Length: 259
Image (tube, rainbow, N blue to C red; front, side, top):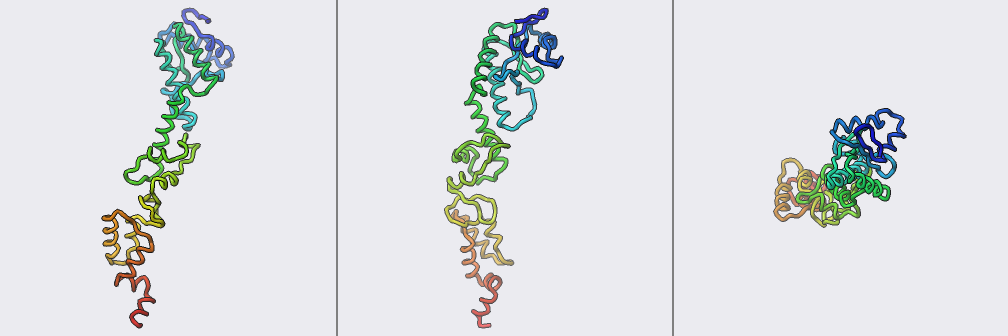
């Protein structure tokens, strides 16, 4: 453990400073940073690849979720591990640094570096939690769900959780179908029905011809019963309507009246 005047360093911080060509990462810079934080020591944590472990809570969003989530998990776990033994941590040049004057911190840093060398994520459960929350947000932002259906219900029907809003596909069609929904034949509204070719109530009303109210009355009945019509159902109603029939099928109407 090297010392520059009143500041102590852990082995990884010293080794990292020696192989950096940039003056801002020298031991002198680290010592100055420690003094500014009122620390008697300065330590870095190996991220398992020989680079300092990145901070997260003090930085902006730079990457897609598949990179950001592990960074966040590792940063949270590292800060918590040092805090548990009474060692202060901070952010410096985008990395997590700690007061290396505290002996307990050296063992924590070694354990974290060793764990990351074996596995790139310190807390798989926390990572899964973040991926789940992000997937729920992505579904809510990108898709119009049926009334009463929450994103987590859709996720439970998917074969796997989309782990990244940029790198993962999020096809909810199969999930909603398994929940008993079908997409309206004319728009992207999802309907709770097992009727093939069903239309939502709004699209059904759009089939109305002129000022005739036969479909408006029909839709009110559908809403009351909690069911949906198909195009074939709509045509049956219009054929039975004295106003719609001659407009939609003028030739057939003339034949019926003998014209």
